Length: 294
Image (tube, rainbow, N blue to C red; front, side, top):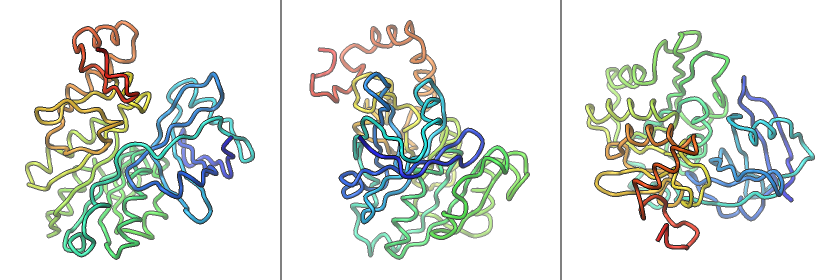
């Protein structure tokens, strides 16, 4: 059992928990995720890691209720426990493997949309711990939905953008990117994490601005092992699976339109059957070692 040490509501329909998981905290890296399961009958829910404390042995997760299991999670409080808390899973952010001195020569821009702010935070924090200060755009529909702003300000240069203009820059995150660039900022790398539609339009803009862009496709993950086929995505000319090959990919090569269409189809049983029929052996990644649908 994995004990919940803290449970709080960050904003309307957005929740944060600190969970006691020393083994995961010891080995996880920015960009990775965990799979949580409330009880023996509960769903497997993949959630990106928002923060970790190696000394305390804790992992921080942030989530929105989107189904029955995550809705039940909102009722959990400090002292309760998860049946399973598995990880770290997925591939770490690419910059973790790079030479620090080379990284210090690069200017990073992070674009976080909604709950996507959670997986952006550990990346910006990691860079800060290694002497690199990144620019960060936090996007939300309105002021009340902005999360982790104060935490992010401690590790990066933050711009907040709200769709309705209730706080910070008025408009979409793409408008905030253009403003930063027009003010003379030059970026070597952009990392965008948030709703699929947001990442698509960020990539359209950064491609025009010639800024290499990494996206995290955690929004399309379902079972977190490559077995279900939900996170199948075309990157360039290759079929990839977000939960085993990613979740991070070259955003300029991701077929967002196809991924979003599959995401909608996968929500129905009929749609899942159709995708499996069409895609054959490439329907899932065989993350279980079973060799796919062969």
